[in-house]
Image (cartoon, rainbow, N blue to C red):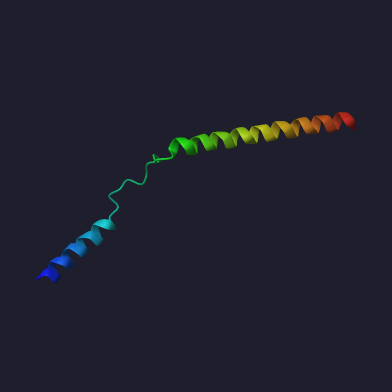
Length: 64
């Protein structure tokens, strides 16, 4: 009898563990503010690199 109860509980745990009751569509997670900050920093880095490239091109045009 104990083995049957164990198998029943084990089966219920396995089935409930495989359910999709958790909403995975939300983007809210523990590190959301940190990842948002990193994304902003990457955008700013791209802007700085582009500005440096433009400045370099202007200097090279003036030299030649």
